[in-house]
Image (cartoon, rainbow, N blue to C red; front, side, top):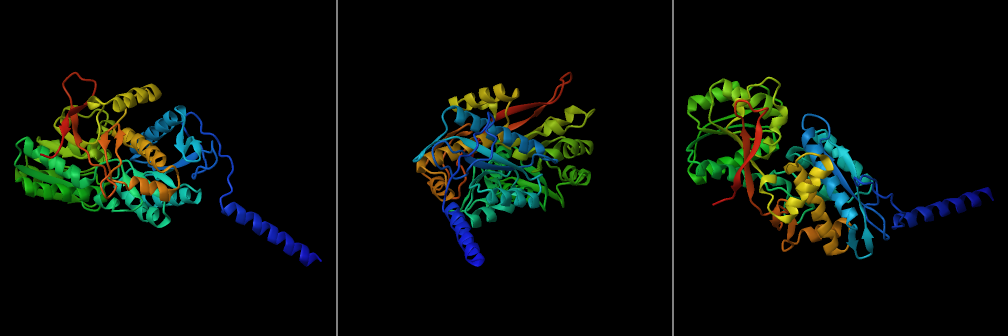
Length: 414
């Protein structure tokens, strides 16, 4: 008798679990004003929250990237929820977000991605860097989880018909834009200092090198370091000076440019142009106290977005909304992450669902057009936007309180 009762109880438990696995839904918690909440990633009955995942470096040396991506995501979610949510075939749903800190470390990024997938998240924004993002693309594709990286620019991150997309342009494009700028400005002798062990830096070096060959620019010297944690660049720039380089391409992140590379390049006599890519943005936040600020003149970088060129209604509204929410001016990481959320919204509403398979198919439609803060674009066959860029830089004059980040001009390939 006891055995029969135990068997009956066991079968009842199994039936309950089976029903739950087949899609029984519970009400998800409503997101707060920032959109922060842990909700049901698949949507469900009207009113259930669709929870996006977000991965980025919220701590560590690259935390400026992650915190700005988080702000862009939260602002977009707040706006969408305030305006009524996401309209799907089964009703209207608010958005929520579950955030994970990858600390700028590839292993931590994989752990973060796996944790989101375990929580049922099917749509992810992240990560920030190419190195971290490359560590989770295979996870996204094997698990069927859609991922939009706002700022992972390495060419290899996205391939045709997979689950990985981006709202930024790819390295081969911005490397070519950098070479185009050098040609347009009349430079003929260029140098390169890069990190051979980093996906982002090495990829940009390859793109810039190829573009120089096609545009008639002579690479007079090339030097590398073995780690993005390198703090001494004097030897590399002594060689740039000896070779007569007029411009040096420096595809590093802001935490290298501000305290190390720029002042050391100037200290050994290189007074020409230092030209980087989007990772140089935020260099002004890492300039050491008491530094000679004049050395940051002639430092430029290719970027995705500038508030000074925010001419469209969407872009101008974003700037106003961001400044009202956070009391500061947004940068390209804010804009690209904000765009990623709105791209998800557009894709979900186009297919009428929020499951990964449906959203991936909607995003893979290269005829779809997205109006974003960074311009109007469609994805190419690899999930990368087709759009132009911006050249930005820094300037300082005696008497200024600090260096000023400036927008030089819009840049495109001629």
